[in-house]
Image (cartoon, rainbow over all chains, first blue to last red; front, side):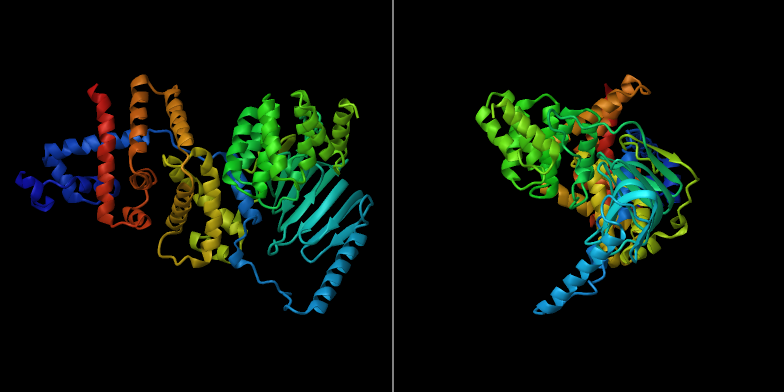
Length: 376
Length: 207
């Protein structure tokens, strides 16, 4: 141990290693600089540490993809996860044990809904104007739409063009325009939405922003942006049953980015990777709607990836775990065909019978076709 | 930031008018946090726009976090930022406070699940990315691989300290506070980390 290692730098001693490290980052040590000029050992140490630092800085720098950035920004901007602490208390919270007041309020709400329904012309009819305190809608020309305002404000657009002026987001409420293939969501914005044959054709944003979600993809449109549909609305092909995309569902919760990634893989035709990605989503989301969706789409992905045995196993698990799912018919019909191909006619019959009375036409048709193949 | 959603299937995005610049640009971080506390989602999105990339980089560099989880962790971090905004006391810079929330989110996540297979796959993928870089010669690629592995060998706390101080330029006093250690301890740990990395660099030079 030489005197240099114990003496302070101000008296000509060598700095401790950590002092050199700190000087590397924060500088401001004139005494150290002077010491380095006079001490070859410390100067060599300094250069050596500098090389290590340079090597680390040359490593690939991780960066968030633009797509992920947009995805997260959109969700934050639309307040999908609005902090509960800042939501105002319900202004009309009813005291308990007052059933009469509750009934009256329920009746009032029903009347308001009915009034809005009538004003909007009901389904399949043209309407010119429909407004609430936070969103006004103007139908351009021969436009068909319907609107429900509770609990969320949801407009189902069938055809034509709507011009919308939506006020600031309200506590716990969302404003959405839905077509059969897409959802447009916004708050505090002015925009127009055009549809044809229940399919989204165009969205133009004049002020604020709007998010368009269609077939698993999404785009955040700002003032001055227009989204226009391109090409025919291709059907999702999955054997005899074409599952509807998740966006058609009631969307109980925002899907995590990992789900959207899996969904993009599937849409890009990378079914095998999509199946793995959905498995990961499923593993992380026990017992919620995300798990239900992920399990279903994993089954679909495996079927598309040419792995019928795995697809059967997953869809069987889905039907057992989520017997009351909105997708039980779709899953059962798809499972029926897979079982039929595997020669398990008894199980295939049971699966088709579960889907026989599904509310969706094509699912019923698929199930009946399967049963017909089985000789019924 | 582009607003284009490249993943939007069957759709094309066109501008029919120049987008209006965000008025939030001139607002300070502290003012944005205050707005967040009042439920302003635009303010929260603006905080994400300013600090999201750095949070992403810090989390993505940790060897204990599977890369496929980083997107979700970043999103969760900013949701938590919105929830915690009313409690922000201004004792640290907003950027540092957000990183603190990200570290809590990350620790909760890592405690919940250890995904060894995914981490091994991540390391292999990173190796492959380095190995495939056309702009580096073979010796340089070897050096980068050694350094990458040496970084991954460091304890999580040292990885974080190194990443935040060396690569993100956050002041030592703030990093020490984030990691719950004294500043002197931080500098000593950083020096240990640097010696470890230097050994990796020099191992190649000696060959």
